[in-house]
Image (cartoon, rainbow, N blue to C red):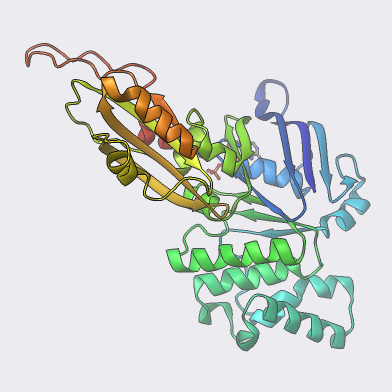
Length: 356
Ligand SMILES: Nc1ncnc2c1ncn2[C@@H]1O[C@H](COP(=O)(O)OP(=O)(O)OP(=O)(O)O)[C@@H](O)[C@H]1O
């Protein structure tokens, strides 16, 4: 388990003091992946560095795999670091060493026998699907393969916790998917707790169990990804499952934002609204994704004001949450400046920009 409690981190002192993390709480259980997202400069890497003990917190506590590592003396810190594997954006492999030699590096420091080292390296490369590339140098591997070697190296000391700092940034979509699938598999098979730092919402959607949004050094939102996407008011949920309604003249119609998550919702709900309930539904936007093994959806629809009750009753019966959206401002003559829309009509774009 990774447990961060009331973590504060300030760089520098006196007039040069620069507070970067404020009162951060975060828990990632064994066998789960917890993502931390946020805009550039929010403090994500600093948080990761406090967890892998490269930075000392100014105050607060950090527990890793059952050990309170906050105040460990330097010598014990080295042992504690072994329980934490780290994977970076560019894998940081040594160019002049083969894949096998790179994976063997951490074992060298432990002084394991040559035979044991060979056995363990072969096992690790097999684990990440690169048994046949042991003798290749990093330049002979693809970005995704290099990242797999980095993961194998991070696992060499059998850590209980893995930190992944933008490990899939710069990889193409197929390589990203395969690295994420590997992380998912490792989480379950090795019962790891993974702290995943990323600015990519697809990555969170694809693999994370929980997510926390860090903004200016504070966790402003956090929770299970499943719950976040089902919450119509969650900025993180909106960024994970963006819903961008097309702008249409909707006079005479009420506009509704729909949110759902789970098996109970029939995939043909829109057809059924028409066929079974006789509702004339205008679909203004819809996003459906599989999140945590279940369908999650967001949609914006418009129906006649007089049919609002039937709409919400039908949707409610399937477990779809429906919330009315404010009326769009009435059309203004061309020579008058348009009034700004209501504050609550934040678009998915503005939310996503604010999040990542
Ligand atoms: N050693 C340091 N000394 C002083 N300030 C630092 C130090 N390390 C980081 N910072 C500052 O802390 C803030 C957070 O940086 P951090 O790298 O943690 O952000 P981030 O969310 O990971 O950003 P990015 O997504 O761009 O990598 C930044 O303003 C940065 O300048």
